[in-house]
Image (cartoon, rainbow, N blue to C red; front, side):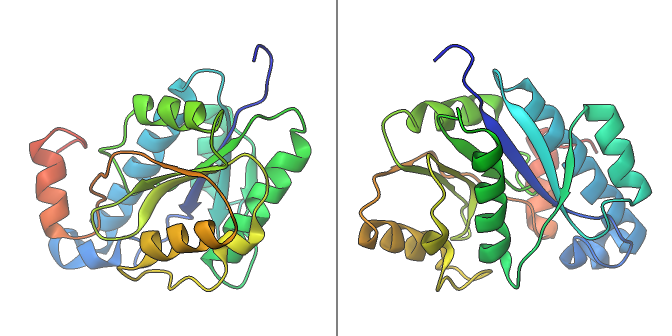
Length: 210
């Protein structure tokens, strides 16, 4: 509907050398892996900002006053929030609750990570559209996780009892949604970027800079 809020939350880690993209350190070195992480966050924010009427927020794991985080805030004109919670599920549930509470006219809210350069603006548009007729939307990753989750309303129980980081994340989340009576739309499955093979493919397809 015209004028409705469309919160789009970007979850990212603060770029600390030796603490991000650690599986790529053997291939890129600690500094190179950190540089790649910063590139991925920037490209994700750029993609999010390009989605029609999206109200982008950056949610960071780590110090929101970090110099790179502050630069992202200025460069992309986005508010910054700190992720809070004992695990990823609690952090996502809290971010959804905050965003949907602050934007009470929202028809839905999306949350994405920063490790999927294959994701497109069209994927984001499709996700927002899916929330017009579904309670939730997921974009699965090839490794069994997901790179996007969207909700029309806060659903904290959706993020409980999930084996985060495992090959079962998407399957468990769909099972959880079914048990809660939620209608879920699935988007196309995409690869994320975690290891050296993923990096080679991303470069080959032009998803990231060489």
